[in-house]
Length: 98
Image (cartoon, rainbow, N blue to C red):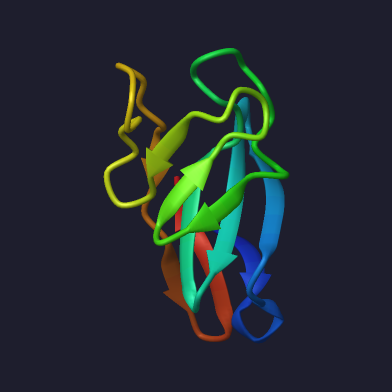
């Protein structure tokens, strides 16, 4: 089932949009013309990533400064992994299949 998240025209660099799908808390991130959908909380200390910074496809947690690759979800300095979700498109909508 396709869940609409946002219209493509409403995307902008710097977007950090919390999304709740059932019990899952996700974060839609749009930066440098790219869009990702990741788990919303840092796997290290459950800190919300809503105010994360993104530079060169590296997400930096605002809580303890851990960095994660947005491509793989892997933490650059420790054995943590962010779960990522595939983004789908339906006409003017960006969403996710669940």
